[in-house]
Length: 94
Image (tube, rainbow, N blue to C red; front, side, top):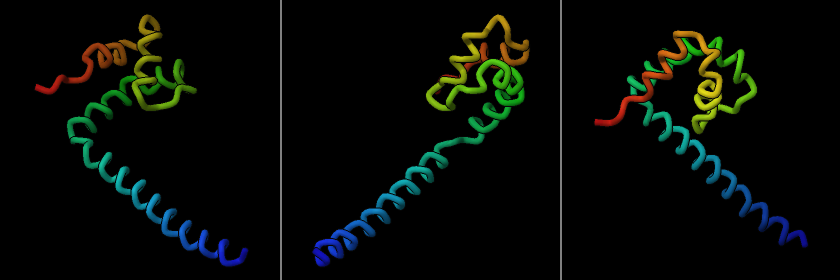
């Protein structure tokens, strides 16, 4: 019984280390794909829609377009700055 437990531990530690390493690579790759233009657009969005986001969409989980969808569902109630940023939409690759 002790031998089996030790063998499991020997397998579990490398597996956990590998999992952590893969997660770190995923984060690094995701960060590498963010361009300066994307950062600038995000900054503009946060500045224009920050108050509206807190007012209407505070509990919405970020990611997958959920915050934008929430804001769009309140389109008639948004500030003019936020409405303008949402109307401009993302630039299409060209």
